[in-house]
Amino acid sequence: MDTVAQGGPALEDRDIAFLGRLSMFAGIAPGVFRTIVERAQRRDIDSEQILYREGEPAKEMAVVLSGTLEVRKRADSGIESCIATLGPGDVVGEMSLFDIQPRSADVWVRPPATLMLLRHGALGDLYRADPESYTLLVLNMARELSLRLRRFDEAVAHIMGHIQAATGVIYSPIARAPRPADAPASNDAPNADARTRSPSATDGDTHHL
Image 1: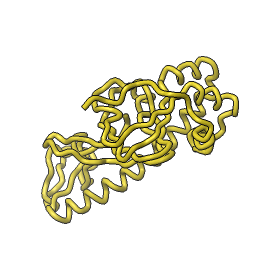
Image 2 (image 1 turned 180 degrees about the vertical axis):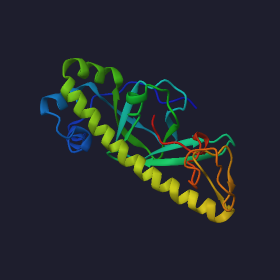
Image 3 (image 1 turned 90 degrees about the vertical axis):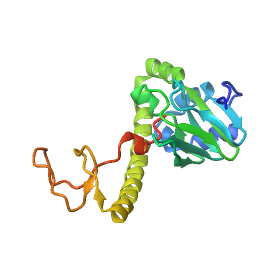
Image 4 (image 1 turned 90 degrees about the horizontal axis):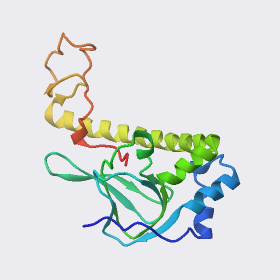
């Protein structure tokens, strides 16, 4: 299935009022905020459409005005999982502003959703015109991203605890392969008594799209 076509109408007054209450725009001067939203587009998308596809170049970010998005990631095994569900006020695609990488996961619209789309070029214009406001906007997004990563860490710890309880296997950040819980730690690696390993990139990923 193709991704949703680009382009769309300007934001409505109710959309602008909603966006003005989001932490993403906290501290942004009213004139600067108005300039940003005037560069944005409003998009109504039907259910079961894909907004972003993994591996595509990232040229915009989106804020959910209404509806729900699912961030989905496929493991090497071929099994696809929903790693995040996003609703009104949530942002998707902002990580590409930081790491300048292609989309890291698929983003599906389920059920119908209305989005604000903001192209990276518009933010580049803000940087050149008002570096201070650009920096504040990026810091706001980074703060929200940090909170989301903390929730993701908690979810991973919960899942890994269930895996350990079911299999007796503990993961170590420096181990090349899982080892039994009662196996001695390697003596030739730093922090050898550490008994945890974060999942590899194929186990799942945050939605830094």
